[in-house]
Image (tube, rainbow over the protein chains, first blue to last red):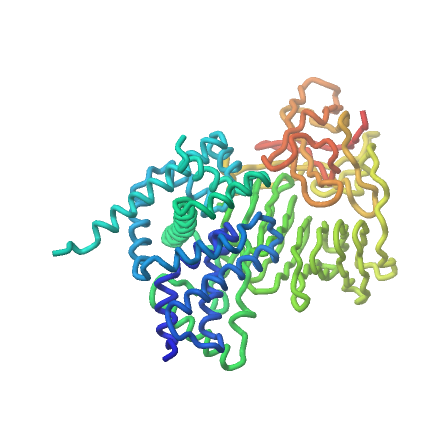
Length: 176
Length: 433
């Protein structure tokens, strides 16, 4: 039995950040990635073909987000070296392999972890990902060297990953 | 450094677009073979979109989106809670009914990308904002660059960037199609390719410009519009008689209220490296005064009060001259260019001299300025004769080239701050060496 509109919407909502993230890998602009997710959601709702299962819907959503991302780059004349499609397929498959319920919990944990990050690190993340500045620009803005920015970003992403895993583990009910 | 750390930094460089072809090949190899590297890339992507979402939410909470005019057509669907289902459902119903109203009318808000000097935004309901910031949304109101040394660039999502500079005012409606109303002043635009059905339109008091995707500069006042096209093509309709001219790249046209004048696109003359002002022609700010006592006519500084600047309220006394009016050849600044500025200021004091520049192939390059002290006790009429080297002028904005060498001069100004020192500008000359 095909998924109802409500099922489609609920599923997309659960996967929202992962689909946006997949679009971000292509466009590297967080605002554009959000717009792309919205377009994907709209297309899913207005598409003539129905989805028989959550897996089919999400495979379609990841592929569509990637295509929309490439269209966005063309429209905006952005020239970025893209990963080949085999690697993008691998990334999508690994995103799809994560348990579907993980999306919401992971984002909650990430939001909590970001609250604990020092202000200087928040500023680094804000400049790089909210304002979409290149690392050289960020380095100049913060009065740091380019190498230092890459190192700090690398450590910051890793620290956030560890924090998220810790919080998600703590949220899991204890097994008897 | 461990392999994992080394790979993480390599991936961050890849996302920053800073790798050589060999390094990109290494990235591809790492991602094909190393699951941990792929996990890191996915993690970075998820964190990037989450950081942006948190910041948007925080800005909305702080009310920093107040400049946005919210109308039924503009409100974007937000997926923060289950209200989005209603919004999507409404869109689905509209689409199913054959109406694409939602998609057509979703406006494309512009955001301030760069700014300097005093500015003012008048938004919905006449609400005036002077404390503008980079990132402020400007849609559904009028953006004004208030002073000769002011400029502001705003950017649309498709990459189209519009800059106004000097005393200028442009109205930006909250709608999908980019329609700008340049009431007066200077506007420079880099326009991304627009859909054939909805080109970018610029209305001025004397002309309508239709743009599909190009780089152009326009200057307008109540009586004339001067347009220079540097890339692409712009269609100009003169309002006084409805005549239309197509202006290709590297051509300019003047559309005035004089319908006897030809509306003809012409190639600009080759640049010159020597220029002498010809007041009162080209006077852009100040009051022209004839002198009947043997003195040369001059431009008397007029007050300009700026209520809110980063220095607090500021009172300036300003003279300004356009160096690019009509079909005059562009004035190219060579490495050894000098400025000779003649005027009168009997009481002496500090004056600030500045200029707006363009890149030779179009587009606003920025403003440069410097200060000089006029010592009192000179000639009885207070006349002065200043000479400045190009290297003495500094850029106002970090994005501008470090020196103005190789740029063309658009206008220049001489002003005093706080007190009316009776400044009179007689002439400005650009000398090649």
